[in-house]
Length: 193
Image (cartoon, rainbow, N blue to C red):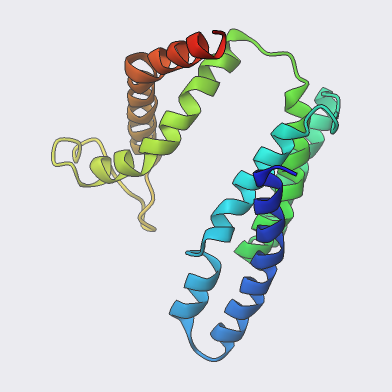
């Protein structure tokens, strides 16, 4: 049993307990405590990461072949979960989507990859790291105010989204070219030694 297995098992047990505790707190009028129990606590964040780690470690045992039909079916199922369950509960949407996303990840392990897949793979972590910062800079930058507009709900309009998205991808590419590429070469050099 690896550490990701143990983390996943702990999170799997702890998350429902915290969820029930948050619902009890909410029923007694403690909104802040309920929010902190379920969303600010570590198991909510660790559950998908530990699940992904478990899937990666056991991907050779959990083989699900890639077919377009299966892939499209999983995407439709995911969209259905979001459309049907999210108006009822965000937490249930989160919990129902994890198994579907797990099967989707397992099928993608066996899909043919292209150079575009590699490029997107290299950009995902830098995008994950900087998207919050880029969003804040774009939202409050005086320079970008003439390009950025929001709708009545405070969400980006389509042109503003394009500006923010393009900036995010460009900065992620700069991080990859300036840092990650050299780190990957350095790691592979010592891994092969």
